[in-house]
Amino acid sequence: MSETNLLTQLEDMQQKALQAVSAIEDEAALQAWRTAHLGRSAPVMQVFSNLPKVEKELRPQVGQRANQIKQALEAAFTERSEAIKQTSLQRALTQAALDVTLPGRRPVHGRLHPTTQILREMVAIFAEMGFQVFLSPDVETDDLNFGLLNIPPYHPARDMWDTFHAATPGVVLRTHTSPGQIHAMRAYAPEPVRVVLPGMCYRYEQTSVRSDMQFQQVEVLAVGQHITFADMKGTLEGFARRLFGNNVQIRLRPSYFPFTEPSGEMDVECFLCGGKGCVICKGSGWLEIMGCGMVHPTVLRNGGYDPEQFSGFAAGIGPGRVAMLRYHIEDIRYFWANDVRFLEQF
Ligand code: PHE
Image (cartoon, rainbow, N blue to C red; front, side, top):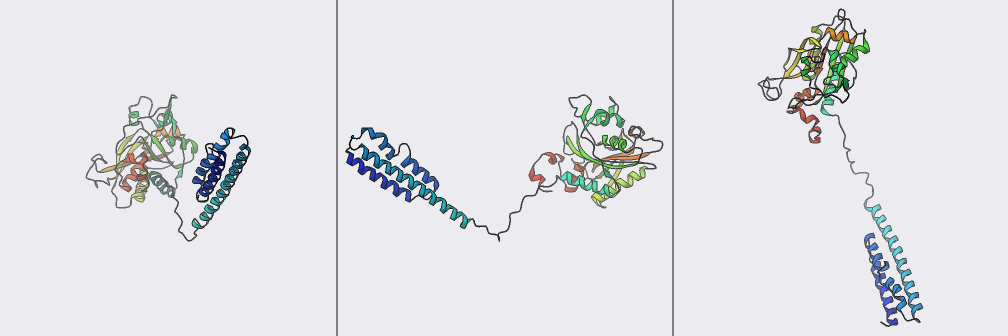
């Protein structure tokens, strides 16, 4: 290859490169152009590395020209790059102009869990009857969850509550909100008490359509002088009527709890079968929503009251069961399965 030829080639290279760059419209293509024309294996760069092979007399001329071309290409790159930035800015300003007349996008609202909604509704009904909210811990001692509630160790009644035990002996996840009765009584004694204790309970048991291993409960406790079974019945029935309406069948039937005497359970007509009997109501036609009873004298004493002078009633109500009745939900496990398609409906 003759050196004059090399010079013509250099001119040619420059012309082609400049022509190519003037047609480029976007940043990516411009970067590709830079690699092709100014990168390590670009033709101009090759001329530099081959310079030692060029005839001695012509070497300065070729070198100088190649340098000028390289500078010209670099200048063209900067210029084009500026131009592209300007155009895209212009485009952004005109195309994505803020149109204040467009309707806004509605933000997605979070909401309360269905059983929390019901729980709050229940608490509000009791609040109107003069009950205050009293919070007590989810993690309890064996003594508060059982012993002080008149369920001594090895008593067969313990079979009613399958329990999660902590690694620390004597520490359990509460199986019901009833230990809160002791906390509340000890906080108020010898004054009268009228409280509701909402919270989560945990049971180490087989789940089914109507019972899960984790569920909320609202404990109700009233302690004072001259409180009778009639007060309990009136309060709980009034509450159920407020919650379900006057037309729903409700019944109070005798039951057994170690911490109440006498004890009862309140049932509401099964929503699914309307009382005929089905899987949800275990064939009975009724769905249990609460356990209740007159506070046992031993429990009153453990709470700091003299059972000769004081009496009271207590109840434990499940908002999950109430929500099932209200919304016709056929499996209580949906509540904690964490499927948003289910939860978004409420
Ligand atoms: N703690 C009982 C349960 O979870 C319910 C209950 C509460 C019964 C208060 C009577 C009085 O099964």
